[in-house]
Length: 468
Image 1 (cartoon, rainbow, N blue to C red):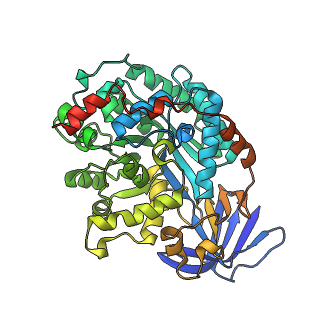
Image 2: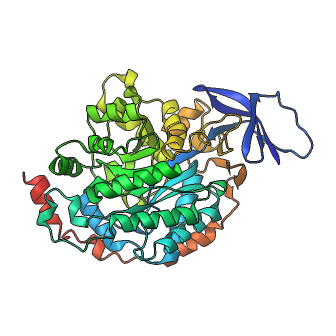
Image 3: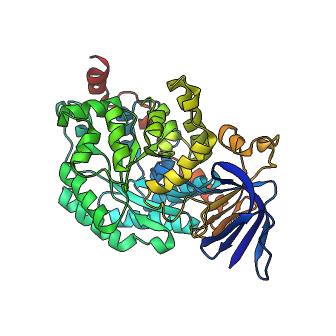
């Protein structure tokens, strides 16, 4: 099966050029100057004029089950927000299925063809939960890395001076969780069909060294992505010093866990020495600008990371801390947010650099840089075609700048994942979005408990973090 996209604008070496692009089966076969590739019998031919073709973005960090918590959790710092999230996390397998479908659909319709689901799994039903997520992602057709959130330390351990808080029952042991992960990898890791299992220890703040190291060993043995939260908040920075006496980044390096397969979500509170370590090890920082602002976590030092050569990707984070899954919103905010951190405008991010983070950087973040993220022969055909004559993309000035810095809506004309067309003329071809919306509409979520501002951990947080 061949598809020829004629005379389409594409980003080639940071310059927009008109090209012909030939897709064959699951891959990009040829990229050539516009008007040079002949039409042959049995080809699907698409007119690329007034359109822009880009590699699909990678949503480098999200939590799909949080679709059910959109608009639910009040504006709180992460540590208090998490307490409400845990209390309102869905418990039904069908909610996990539809959460995956919803996250995949929203990612696709905003230019994404791959996502990293740092997935909550129901205790005691981990296999069933992952099965529901995988089924949802396969139904939509998006490429997905599912990295179950695992931890072997109790909730209170994630707070500075957490020993002063009431201690909940300990989760499963590190050995039990590693055995679980081996089973999930054997059952669900399916690269040929675009489904990957990743190792997803929640973060140093709720994971023992045994679990952090063991996940790394599984990552090394199976060539899988290692994905974890890192220094999202000032509280986590203080906790690292309290627990280790050194930076959390240095601690991960001491454990041998900083590698080119390691992606680290947030990194708001990393310092210059941390940045050097990330750059030297090829580790990837996943920037989540919307949730970082929503939770008051701060501004990650993205400009410093970029200048130091750190691989940076972009993520939406879960819908409970973003209230959406829109990759174009993330690109815009991730580009302009950092102008206030450096008055030298020559250091500011360009739209081209933002696209590079969302594509090449994102592909590296999910350990798929050799398969996707680039518009080049031999790469998988994970591509998105945008309508440049849509009113939100007018007037016809710089289309890439309008895409990243403007307010584009409903502009995805077509999308492919592994050469399979998932969107045509703006319509999803795989799942019925009306059914999805009906499910979301009829399952009412209890909001009373989530609106309370007096969770039991709040007084401890205020005492430790605010009344210093």
